[in-house]
Image 1 (cartoon, rainbow, N blue to C red):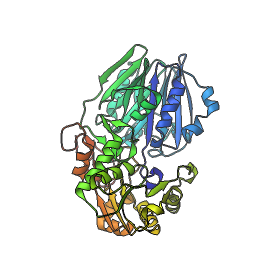
Image 2 (tube, rainbow, N blue to C red; image 1 turned 60 degrees about the vertical axis):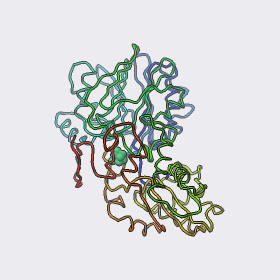
Image 3 (tube, protein in one colour; image 1 turned 60 degrees about the horizontal axis):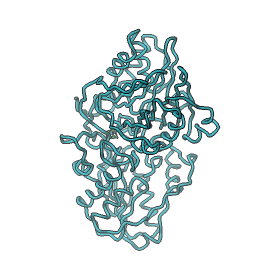
Image 4 (cartoon, rainbow, N blue to C red; image 1 turned 180 degrees about the vertical axis):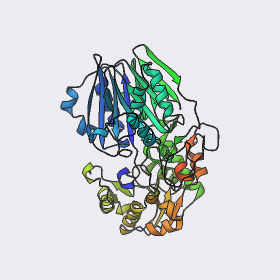
Length: 470
Ligand code: SF4
């Protein structure tokens, strides 16, 4: 479903390149392909002639990095960021990369994820005299690095990273090198590629494809890459704890043409749809997906069930960002602006409507209503993931349990609320099986905390949460 309607949003996307004469332009295209990961802030820091310079602003890539602006940018290395506002709130000062100019060094930093002990670290650092320029959790690492004294930068970064808990993929750039770090659980995706002789790092492999880079590998949990003009080296700053890639990256966040740990996202979604057909076969006339992220699972369900797949819902691609409004009443209006039922497809039909997840339930209710108003005789809702019963503390904006309908209501109560003829969620086991990650263990190396409440890291919250301690 459409991110801004669902109320389930990714925090951001990262792109970095080292050793390319058109680093600014390549980063622009990389960020553009990661736009789905964040639409509220865009930024880029470039390294040129021993100096770092920053351009950033609130808005989409094309709004911030305009054609005129791009003509003024050059450098042979860059890191870039697209942001959705969660931890720390919005505002220009929180748009990344953050650039720090100290007396003896400059450093730019971009982050995807959420540092769960940021508040504690911030209090400690402020008590020791640190002055924060943003309200984002990302900045904590910069202060930890500076506090490391005069030792070499790499060991200060390593020590700083070891103080953090939670989910983080970090890009840190100076005028001489770029550091790439992944948290010890590997919660967020980050891939390494090669474009000519230049190393490229991106939150999703679709960005590597767009800029024409060859995929080399995914960044490992607890890994620190150091990229400079001499080449690339890899070190471990922490042992891999419990490998825990975010399941929602496969279900919903990532682009279908991206691969995560060797698994194509569209294929994973199709398999989730096929698994739904194994777990619940409905007697119906057509299967339709809620665009865009429900489409792949709908195709999978149709293939496995033998019920024809049809485009029963149409997405209006020309609705601008101005329609993205956070209040409930405007969000409901937003559904109509962005999705339309195709009457000729659904009229007089028993419709299976496949979507990836339900957060608040209000959007599902509107879509079911639209399909019925368009003449569907029955609407059966199938969800290609388990009920989201627990908040996410790792960079997805579902940190308030009160907003999650599945935390408060049974499946039957949700069905009644959304007005569907039936409602089925995929099982947790079926989700793990269908994605089929190439790792051992019950979870196959993925985080399932929003479904089963088993958090792979310590969390720091006043909400009542169970967590599994590594
Ligand atoms: S809690 Fe859910 S959304 Fe958050 S990282 Fe884990 S699987 Fe992803």
